[in-house]
Length: 427
Image 1 (spheres, rainbow, N blue to C red):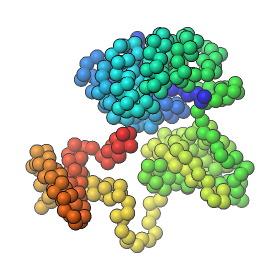
Image 2 (image 1 turned 45 degrees about the vertical axis):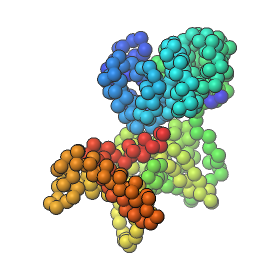
Image 3 (image 1 turned 120 degrees about the horizontal axis):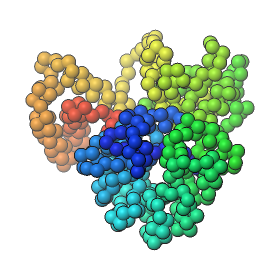
């Protein structure tokens, strides 16, 4: 089983505190803390919501949503679950999974319901006493995909209580004991302050695990450096694209050390031909490029990298290095739906900031939310009516009108297409 190093953020009153029982503030900015964990090669992230009231829970969910967006780690949500609706809120905030607290009978009672609703793969359970899993073994095996053991000393009991893989929350532990924990068959990873406090050492810890024949989460390359055809300088060019938009960001070169470092760290590393040295992209600027995929071309002499780009790719401050237009012929842009949506939405947002006389969009903004909602409702009704018409053109026109008014509402409420598409992808 591949083992993971998973930091944990405990949210309390909008800040990150020490742990479930210690409210000492360790970070006033949990989102920035999540970014730090990502930058230091965390495999996933567990976020506990320690809210006491509904208002605090809503604020915590906003923070969790931002953590999911910024960190781009698979986030597991936990804490403050009383009913199925709370699991739904965590998953809709962007969490890949949710953890039920098996120290509460109410959480055990909703296991089947939430598992059937959202999928077994999205539901885990936390527990301190492994006996609770033994007592509900049939339920757990059928409706849970894993667990979180809150007491590492009870690993042997947990192994007997369930066949499910489980994370182990560890607060303080000696290095040799940490390796023993990870070597246990059903343990799929460690979390807690033993990881939080040593987050800068995750790569070193993974190397140590490998030396001790413990499989850890890492990039496994299908091609060795010797397999590539190099240029006259012994290097391979790399074309870099944004993994979401497929925008070409830059072209750089790798030597063997850069290639191996990229695979080891998950951050794009190149060889600077001008400086004649290894170049970790973002080391000085903070504009890291996190690897999503590396693909070789048919001749194995070029690498295509899909990355998550932090900030901008170009040293000029531009998003992409490719901005000096040489020549251009007009063509139909309609084949890229997201680009069309973004361009129309950009015009709508610009109208809101820079009103234009006679603009229908500005008329809607001036009339306010009630008018926008009224028009949106009317256009939705027009879609229903058009759908009864055998001519498909009519429904296309009505859907287009609806989408336009929906984008006006999005601009009014300051919601972006990226937020919408991310939400859809999480469903």
